[in-house]
Image (cartoon, rainbow, N blue to C red; front, side, top):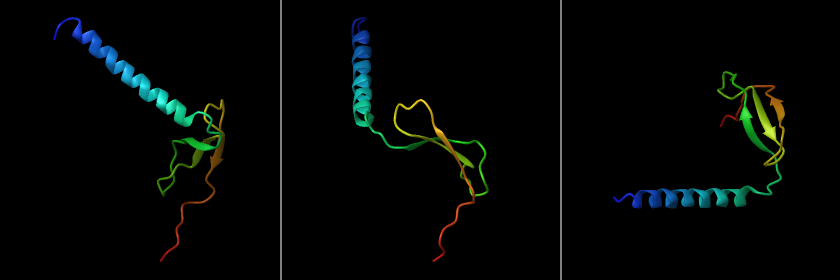
Length: 77
């Protein structure tokens, strides 16, 4: 590879990454609904976090903390 070919290849890779990121921003921009944005490090016997963090919308500055009040249960068939 020549010395000029390598920088051109890097530029093309960066342009492709920017295009993918722009597509993601367009996809999620303006979504104003709550989503789980994290969980507490402590987990119960069921393997689920004892707390989850819920953001009200993409780009929100804060989040609410919800605490589990009982372990996971499922109907038995």
